[in-house]
Length: 367
Image 1 (cartoon, rainbow, N blue to C red):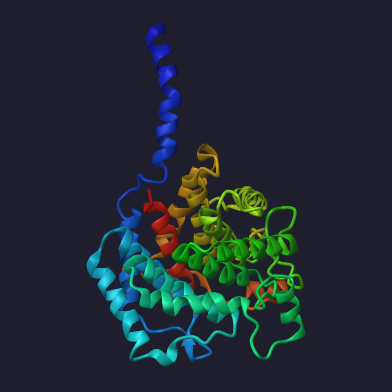
Image 2 (cartoon, rainbow, N blue to C red; image 1 turned 120 degrees about the horizontal axis):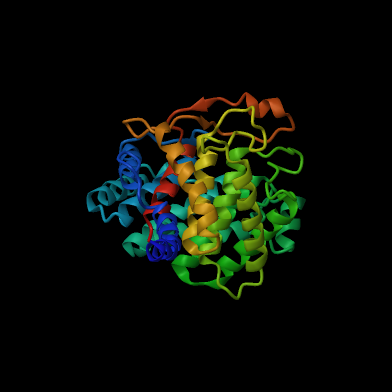
């Protein structure tokens, strides 16, 4: 009997380790990321454009498009890849008037999409389309404000505004440009920009104000920071001088998210407010950042894999049979008014949430 108990005692750590590793791979029927991802990705194929100011492809659609493309490539779904590529080629040709101009942070980030197409197809026409969106983030336009010139003179993007979501729009395009070209200038300036936002907006509890004059921990706004740090750290060379600072900011935030996760697995519209409603797009972004951290070895598996799994299991029921996600906060400007965040409408199928779910899907599917 003692030998049996001793053997069981020795086996226990391996069983715990196995359970931790399978926490992000072993899901019940209906919850597997490939099932969920297929629903959401295929919904995009025939979806209408979501235009910025009614004129150009908006950033939520860009992220949804990108997520669907990455999912198709990761699952080796050539049919889906072809459908998504055909939709993009139609945009570039017949619908070229919808291609965003390069004069605003929410428009320049479109460059991420053709750069991802270049990564998948190796067709240089996509590189040539995407790279100017990254380059012009650091080239002052002919008409610029004194503040824009001040940022540029300090080595930052002239599009810097210190709004929490802008950080993602800037750094993700630079990161993709680095991945496409190997040119260190792109990733180094993305890291420099990220540290600026960390220093200005991250609070001691690890969370971020929406803006210096909007001192609220808005869910999706914090989601941009969480996902943005995760994406940047994946590609940032070990010898980059800002890497340790960014990793510190990332880990501090993940610790805080663990604390504020609601009992059901979600995070709320205002993260630190237990009375407000749960919000899906921010929760998905946090889940993406957590899954990425566990898989990259930045976060302790035993501590954080259960947090990420609990979140995913809570997120899936918000997806209907047509691949539409519910409980998504609409586009939200900054405001120094707590009630404003309480009163934001929620939509089903909004691309902010559709895109964020795709991020979680491919994070879970990646080896």
